[in-house]
Image 1 (spheres, rainbow, N blue to C red):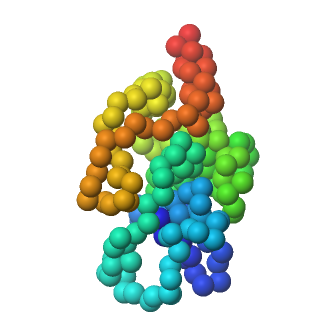
Image 2: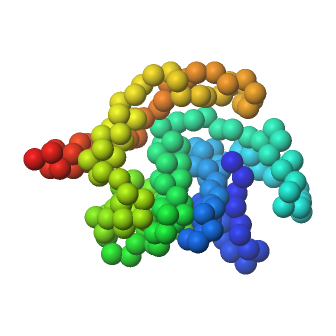
Amino acid sequence: MIDLYPRDSWNFVFGQASLTDGVGIFSFARYGSDFYSSHYEGKVKKLQKKSSSDYSVFDNYYIPEVTSVLLLRSCKTLTHEIGHIFGLRHCQWLACLMQGSNHLEEADRRPLNLCPICLRKLQSAVGFSIQERYKALVRWIDDESTDTPGVTPKHSREDNVNLPKPVEAFKEWKEWITKCLAILQK
């Protein structure tokens, strides 16, 4: 939940990953509904230069309310950056999860699914059944068990409680995946 700035000359990034080193980082700070308000609790009060091995900046960090929209945005960023880790570059041809984004509206327009070209590249790199992948994604959305860890209203990392998974924002995407499954099963 901390904003990322890879270089002083850069604007923020939602995430960044290496195509060759198998590492990535992503921030969900800008995905909370209150990020752009003057009352945002996650603002860094004072710029601190820390060593790369000092993780104290994460102590008592701010955790916003986990909403369906925050979860959808987070899944897009996470899977986009993992796509880079598996060797996918930014897609410039079709509506695709692997398109880059420089602001929240652009990130929101990006679909959660890969275009056919990037899907095939990922399948080639990792090796999986597209049909089984789509079934697993639908199961994840449909699984409304309370096994999804959440946080208490006090925003404490130590006091995990079970909260329902907010998936309302995934409805349109689930319909898309279901249609794709129907075609694959023919």
